Image 1: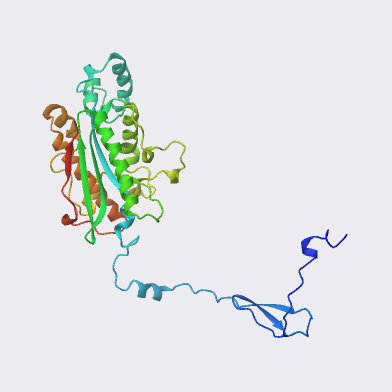
Image 2: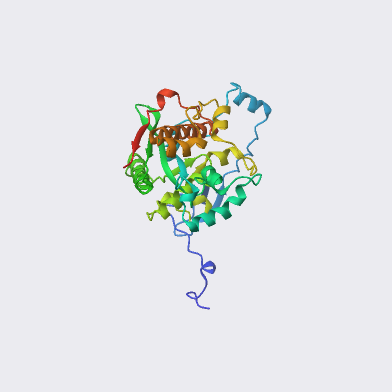
Length: 334
């Protein structure tokens, strides 16, 4: 085999020559010691390695006691609230699509009767009664009358929660407004992040959002023939690519059989209740009987405040004081 045909490992390069016979030692983790050769003779190389680092000692009980000597609860994340500024907290309020079961067309009445069987507890409830109680829970038979949205923003050296609550009789107009709000929020967080920083993705946060708010919004947007925002698009995404936060899921800690209401979580974390003026069971009555959209919007906004406070508490942060929560901007969408 000729020299040119030999594999590279069989033909190592000739070591360099030092012109004046002076040897040097390489610096760094792996050095090279060279002995001074005679003129025009190859240099002899010896590879030298630094000694291995000693094994790192594991902390003992005394170390841990010294670290936690102040006996204060440790934050699970960074003290700064900046990590939450790309989160859009939301809550929705829904009602049945029409006030009465009898106002459904014949096809939907038949389909509701089949669906209502799973809600009958003692077999005495009529389809009409169940429709008034449960019609707003299912996106196929209900509609959204209010969406409240909030986010954290830094102002004058402190983080404040700013909230907007939208309400409307025209669901399509309401959802168009929601889509526009999400688009503008995406621009806001990336403009604030700086031109040369990495792009930040919008995250949605709600209590029981994975089971209710997020899919309900997505379904009603599609039913109204509107474009689905990217943040609500889950088709084709891997689980870790879906940027949804559910405070109820976080509180479960893997317990799939437990349902904990937002009001109960607020109580255990000493957060003021959002149910003082009304609760979710009254939304149908307030909308169809009283037609008080502003009242529903106020209630919806309070649930957003509590969802944000609970998320902070679940991450080891103090809840926001009242002065860090801006007054809600209520908008009745025409």
